[in-house]
Image 1: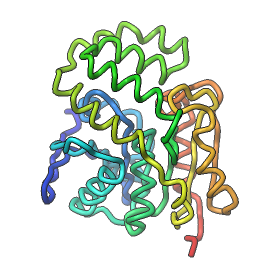
Image 2: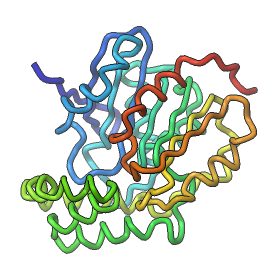
Image 3: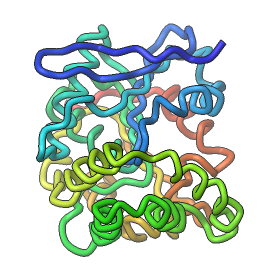
Length: 273
């Protein structure tokens, strides 16, 4: 039996999520930007995080269903935090990948009661300027209605060359199922990233932080970690690891990624402040 998709209804919006595992602690996962909903991959996500389920009940949150025409990261974080509270989450270990990491930083700053530990994967604290150029390319392809080109450009940016070449046919097959509505939704979500910056507020994060990045990140660039590492690198409760051959999608490809997350969440830290 597969993982069940649930819908939480909050004031003014609804949000799909799924949960798995029966551990005593709570892990909330905020995935990155995608063309189709993460809920379509619920079984695969649950399998990938199987090692966490003795320690955790894991919640994976999609973005809200009813998107406004303009939807910046700060609003995504506000809505996700409300959904977390509505399902009863408090003091969660929070992992955000790529755009999900940006949302997670906003939640850690503005809703510290929701976050016990914060893990960030392949993300950035400032998307202004050249760092958002790749996402701009994706938006242009989606606006043109070219799902096949979008999926290929997406995969080429996320994955190392050998992985991308092996995945081309799967990407093209997946693109065939994409609807115009999904492309329009993708454009709104992607555009919400381009002016994002929380670099000047990173010092307000009071919980321990793990930063996982990739030196060969072709989506955000190899220096995407810079503002986060500079702001938090002097703290005893900050940990960092840089991957060298898995690209932006290290969170899916690196064989030790889940172990690094679990080891960090299990470590003893004193809360700052």
